[in-house]
Amino acid sequence: MKNHLLSIAAALFLTVAMVSIVVFFNYAQKTVTDNHSHFYFYLFISLIFIFFINYFVIEFLFKSYGKKQIKRISDILPDKMIYEEDTVNFKELGEMIQKNVSEIDTMKEMEDYRKEYLGNVSHELKTPLFSIQGYIETLKDGAVENLNIRDKYLERIGKSVERLLNIVKDLDMISQLETGEISLHYSKFDINLLIREIFELLEMEAQNRTAKLILQNSLPVFVNADKQKISQVLINLISNAIHYSNREEAQIRIKTTTAKNLVTIQITDNGMGIKPEALPRIFERFYRVESSRNRRDGGSGLGLAIVKHILEAHQQNISVESTYLEGTTFTFSLEKAL
Image (tube, rainbow, N blue to C red):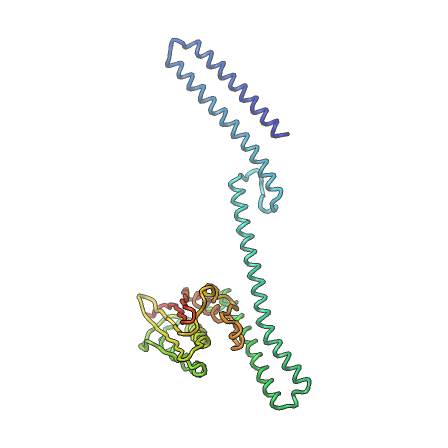
């Protein structure tokens, strides 16, 4: 009803204004009939008056209508979105709504991620805990009297406890890396020498898989990085390559190259490879390309996530290329030491 009264008042005002201008123009026409220049002057003045009167009336109507619509919309929006409705226009309201929609989408994604993350943590912890519980119950039921069974079950309990500790340790490290609680201790070291040391550390593991570890460049190549953290990166990547070798005459090749101020490290295997649909997710926490075998081997599913976080802490990225059933190559760079 209010809008109708406002429209009637505006129409009445425009009518009175137009009639006044017509009267004025008619009077001017009679007094200046013999002077064309004066006639056109008064005609120009009349048109200007008409333009401004229409402009201000239409602007007033639109503002009044806009405020009512904003009030109507704000009534169904959260109170915190609109503080002073008189100072908000449609553009600002649209920006507010878009911002809140984006925030809601982000919150939904975070909630989905939280649910998935908690589900994964629960599943990872539940598996070894149930194993420990089962072995203990069996021993309590009398199997402890059989030395062979007792020793075998105690060994399995020990492995399950070790896996639990690895999961908790890896979760703690990722949390600290994300929050910046772990500081990097940069030093100058030979990356090829470190790779050879890790080869020695993983030699038995490689032999059990009949995998051959090859360093293609044995000359000293010095980098500036946190040696302990980069050692963990290399151990995780090389250990993964060994676990996924899955073929006779498996080979894991490490190649280091220098270019300007960076040293690039490539870790290539001729193993089973990764399916294209899995590639975008391999650096996610707990994501496994082949979950059943990885759980059997006792991995936490956090190795590649830790690798990614460590390299990001060094302000570097890691990339992966893979052909399914042919092999995989991980590539990352480090700052070259001067």
